[in-house]
Image 1 (spheres, rainbow, N blue to C red):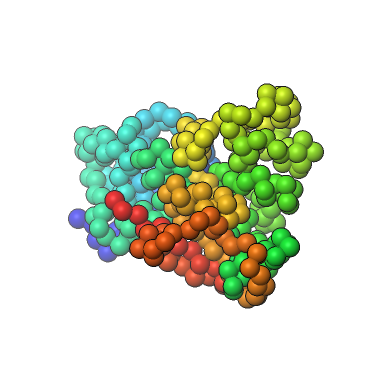
Image 2 (spheres, one colour):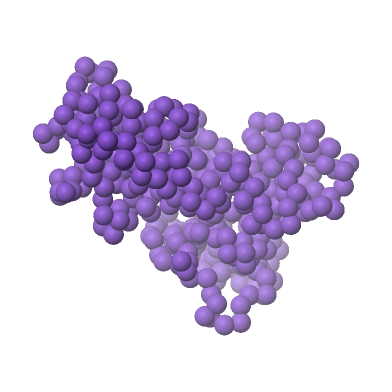
Length: 372
C-alpha cells in the first residue's frame, strides 16, 4: 500500500526529473530517490539522452559516497526499464543493489517494458507498489510526461502550436510588420519552448519574410540544444543564401516538399546539407518525424500553417502570447487563417493549463481536449 510518505518522496522524484527537460528526448523525464527509514540516501535523474537512467544515476550517487542501498526503498517516476538500449536494464541495478521495495509512479507504455519490468522485480523477491492511475499525483506525472506518453503509444510526435498576437487578435500590422508583437520576456520563454521540443516547424512564408535562424538562445545555458528545423516548402523556394540554408550543416535542417519540386533545386539544397522529405500531408510528415525519433514539434508558423495543423487534428497544446496592444486593420493577419468553421460546436477546445505573465504580456497555455 502506498502511504502519504511514499507520495512525498515520489513528488521529490518528479521534481528532480524536470532537470532533464530539453535534454532527454525522445526518452521520458524520470527521477529516482533512494530512501531508508525516512531519510534520503541518494537521488538521480535522467540527465541526457544516451546517458545513465535515473535509477542508475541514483545508485551512482550512493556508490560515490559509499552508501549501501541494501534494504532501502527506491522511488521512481516511471517503471524501471528491463531491456538493453543505450543503457543496460535498470531492473538489474535495482536487484544488484539489494533494494527491498520499489515504488513506481507510472507503468511504462513502451511495448518492450509495459509491466515486464515490474514482473522481473517481483520475481526477484522485491516488493513493488504502483500509484493508482486515478490518483492526483499519477495524473500530474502523466501531464509532465505527456510528450513521451503520446510519442511511444501512438508513434507520432507531440505537437505544440505557439503564436504571439495583440489584444485585437493580430499577429502583424496591415503592412506585415511583426517585430516585435511581444516583449523580451515572452521571447525568452519561447527559447525555452524551443529547447524543450526536438523540432521547430515553420512555413516558407516565414523564411522569406524574416530569414530566421530558428535556434535556441538561452544565456544561462552554454549547451542549450538547438531544435531540428523543419521547413514546409512545397516548391523548394528556400533561398540558398538564407540563414537556414547556410547553417544546415551545423543545425539539422529538413525541408518538406511536394513531388513537383525540381530536381535541380533538390540537388542544390542537398549540397548545403539539407534533408528533403516528400509528403502530401502534415500527418504523413509527422509520422515520418516519429520514425526519425523526433518526439515533439513546436509550430511557429503563420496563420496558414497553423490552420493546416488545426485542420488535420494534429495540435496537442497551445502557447498563446497576448501583448497589450491594438493594431487594427482588416487585412492584418490573425493566428489561424483559412475558411474557418461555420458552427461553434466544431471549434477546437482547450483545457487551460496555466496563465502566465511575461513582462507586460500574458500567456495562456492550453491542452487540446480530444475525444478518446
